[in-house]
Each structure stands twice: as C-alpha cells, then as structure tokens.
Image 1 (tube, rainbow, N blue to C red):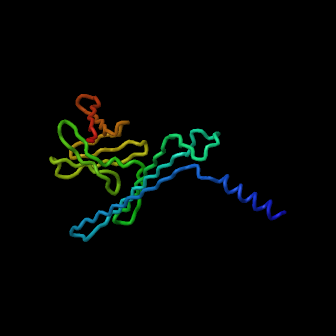
Image 2: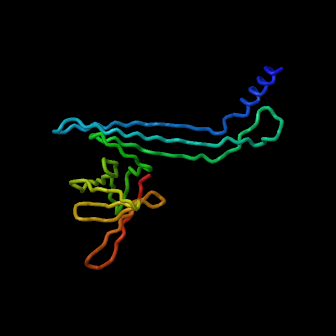
Image 3: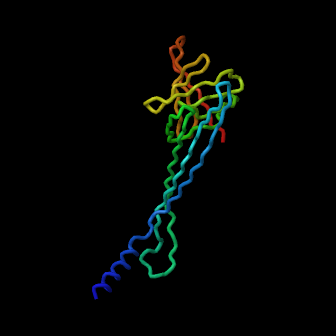
Length: 177
C-alpha cells in the first residue's frame, strides 16, 4: 500500500513540474585576424541572444486535450563579449556597430578594444568613441572633441561646445537601415 501511494505521488508530482518558459539561446562567434608588422592579432567577438517567452494556455480551465497557446511577449537579452588580442575581455550590452549618415556622408561605427571607432572616406585616421560612467561617450576626432550618446531610435548624437559663440552645437548621425 505504501509503495502504491508513493508511486502515485511521484507520478502526479512529475506532472506538476511542466515547462512554463520557452527559452532560446543563440551564440554567434566572429574571429577577426589582423596581420601587421607585429604579427597576427586575433579579436574574438561572441554575441549571445537569449529569448525567453512564458508559456500560457488560452483556455487553461477547459477539459480539452490539445489546448492552444496564448501569445505572450518575448524578452530578448543580447550581450556581446569581446576578447582583445592582449587577452583582456569586455562585455557590451548593446552593440551599436552599424553605418550612420550625417550631411550626406556615410560613417562606419565598429567595436574595438576600448569602445568604438568611427570611420569615413575623408578620415585619414579613425575617430574614437569611448564610453563614460554616465552612459554617454566621448568622441575624439582629428580636430573635435564632443560628448555623444545614442537616442531611442539608435541614432548617434554628438554635442560639441564652441568657444567663440559660447554655445553647444548638436550633430545627428542617423542609423542607416
């Protein structure tokens, strides 16, 4: 009698632990190798995208055997981990690497070891974007130092102080889709 009772409890207990979340993990690894006079340098970029969706039934109380799923929102978490040639690793919550456009000029923003590089056809040397503790960026170009941030649409906004006019000018780099 004791064995029957215990096996019935185990059988019903296992049914109670059904899957209630649909989780999808996708990891994409990109290895960039640069050959120069110092030798080969490898940069490893791992992008991990996790999608979590709660599973809910439309008519949970009905006695039907096959029940339809209720559409629920999907939580997407994306992190990028970069391993530099020197072995140091940093994690980026949102990768802003893309093409941007301002005043008819196309700019290429790419991740690098400490932040981002900004390149354009007219640049001899790429400009730098470095993250600050206030979730903004310091932009350092050939003859310009600015404060930058990304707006809700993913556009890059640079604010530059002008000594002569004592004003702050704003330049918007629109993300090319």
